[in-house]
Image (cartoon, rainbow, N blue to C red; front, top):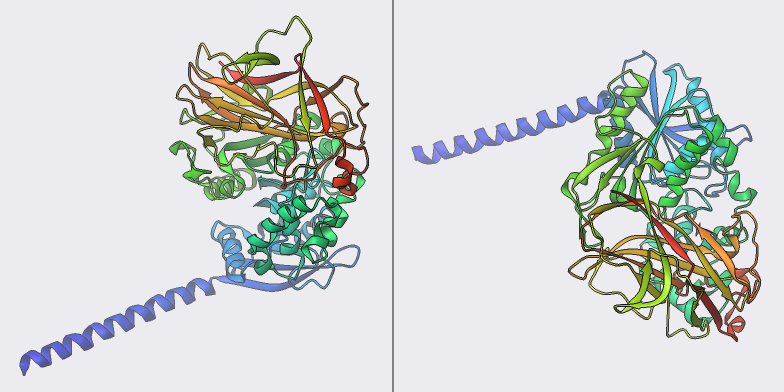
Length: 582
């Protein structure tokens, strides 16, 4: 009997303790929530009368003006998630604010991705700067579209904007939805995701089978690229608008800084990017143009073996089946707020920023730094794409051929059984390559270790029987054990190689020189005995526009334009230059 009473007593005792602990935990959470002053339905009016929706987090009962950390986004996610991100700014000693693009959340206006951000972000910063809780200093951070909006804010600099921290920033018209004037398909469904409602259409976006099947239905049907939404069965007005601007014209130029616009940017910039970020040439374009037009403006880049999403979380241990070097993983939030403290509060500069360009060398498990993109390498290895046979491939020769020769290739666009140009880096390490996929040129084994460091470039000498083509160049390391490590790639339209703003068609059967440089940036330690492999091909697959070469607008071309195959002569004085650090 006593034993039962004791057990009952202990049971009641632990129950009281448990309830008390839960009450204490709940009280602590309530206290934490009470520490913030949250305003979640703010309206900001733009100069042209539009309404922007915003949320603000401040420290309760703190009336001292503080610097403001702004996120400007088209992604209206779960309210709790967005609140958490602006509360983080408050916890770090700032005021946190998130502003949603025109038409999103509580904004009554029409949704048009990209188009209004340059003006609207300026107006949002102007509104913030006039609030009594702002000390006149605003900073921005975020990735992807949020990275783009930061550069859009620099189209016309507001004096209250003191720094930006963009990650994998998009540059509309340059990376996505088109890359080097070739429209790439992944942004097709993205338009529905952000444009279908005031929040995000996750149901449509998560329907991967629908959009993968759509690409192949279009490919197999042979219909015009502009009919993609007709095949899908749902109008896509954003897609139709984008493809009506195949040149990098004023429609794209007005969205973010272009050419001399960069000369007015005088605030420090910290950018994050990845070697395998799909929109990398967008993100690095901003920095290269800033370096060109405003060389005194301080900027820093942190870059390593990351993809588009991985960059934004400080990297992933495994990327496209490749196990990255452990040292490459980093705490992006910590560095971001250290940077804000450095710029806005005279704190210490983040330790990782040894120089302007801070990059992880794949395969070496170490970070290196350089004062500029150009100083990353001390030599170029030049390889001519010859007709000489080497192993199962052609020879990439360091010596220019004495006799002009060419390789011939015929591409039948009407044949949908064969697709070409498997340039996408997934997986990064392959056991073999498709030897029938264009031409491959392999170097002799390296006589010493070296680092491929930067963006490769080159000139392709060719003649074709048509007026245009889209082509790709992919760079691999072939290790001594025979594995193929995907380093970098280029995809582009020949008729825009000289000027992205103006199409210049090729003259049939005339030898043309197509120079290219807007390739994907990489750093990789190569061992003695490794070889470099260069793949060259015409772009023909379901994952982007199909350029039949007639000279008509590419989005209008159909399989009826494929009656005569594309015939190419690739000349052996074509070359690729690979930047290396010895």
